[in-house]
Image (cartoon, rainbow, N blue to C red; front, side, top):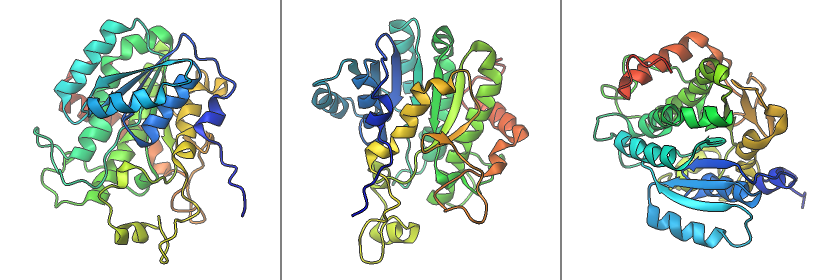
Length: 316
């Protein structure tokens, strides 16, 4: 059997000392988020696990705390509910004078829910809008630390063009896969524009392509859909290209701590390095779509997002 040498989140932080650093990780109740939180805390960081299910998050934090040099605390956050985002941000702003790392990890894909109470597609609301608002509300604390924002995207962004006339999917026929892909494209466009706007504050923003990993994100994926995507083969075995959760979290952690990324923003990262532009020879799960570097589209999404979260007129 060939040894899988792809780095894990633990490998990335093995020689880092994050004592005195504060990190906020969204979606830390399971999967990549919990592994990211655990790895950062193992290196000494004070980590806030921002989760929808606080009871489950507390139970998980209790399991993970043993042997960590840092701390794990749990905070209620439902990114699809902007009032929840504002409440969570208020708690964080009151508690911390500076925040060194914000890992925008939480995400939803195929799910029974289609819209938030505000009538916005739950994927766009959770994966993009909630993080967009949270980053704005924590900006002063991130500025104080010259902090880093890490935004998780997905290979699903490739080939997706945002429909600016219907970002919330109010008029289009439901298509979970397309809606998810658009939200992941929005993640990269946000990182591009946020890096441009906030570089003067010393805040860097980068997007991460974590690779394909089995997590709770696929809880509503049927076996047929998993085969169609390529996660599992016809015989039911797992595609060897799939990463473990620890491997999938590695690039997020690397983006948050790597000294070589100090002061560098607007990047798309993959496999603990710079991602490459995809072409006809690229594996469907790798690389980024060069269309995501469109500055005009990124700026347009920024303005539309400000309006959707009620921050029209903001200069942030």
